[in-house]
Image 1: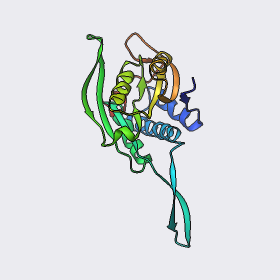
Image 2: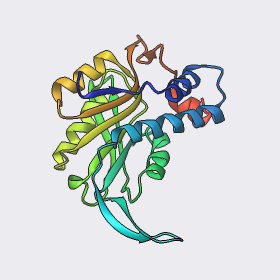
Image 3: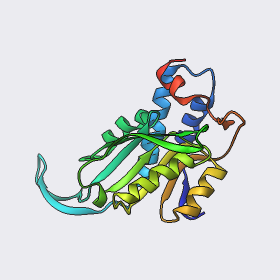
Image 4: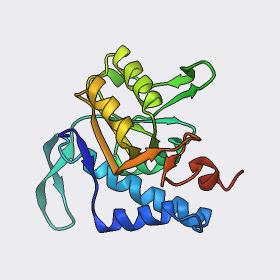
Length: 208
């Protein structure tokens, strides 16, 4: 699929191995997540527009390239918050947001409980951040909500995704670019990705 981009860099694959490994302690797990997030952000922004500026180095004047647009990373809570700080560090002048939504299995619907978007988000390149795409229901709800705010330039950044979840997104939102490290997991009976990485929040924050 043309709008699904899998990061195959050796550093990304090594970090993914640490995220998958159940023996990885939380501090190392967090470092690996930061590395994967950085790789995803760089891949998703390789075509950002720049403008030419003239600056003075310690030796002479020279022309340089500087970003001309705004990128808005939006964390899908709670797990997406683990990717947000790294994304903001990698993106100068970024304007961040938070989107609290989850899929309620009993109701058979997604529930939105928090939404805070940066001003001017409709003209930004939006990077939706969530460590995993399972069935795709939460991702679809987030993308749909962004379009309701007039956002047209959306990329979804995730560490691990299921083939079924990605297919759902591609079918309903063919203009959304998806960046992931692994896209061939499946959804197990308990809703976790298989082989997956377990409960991301518990492993990242060291909670149970």
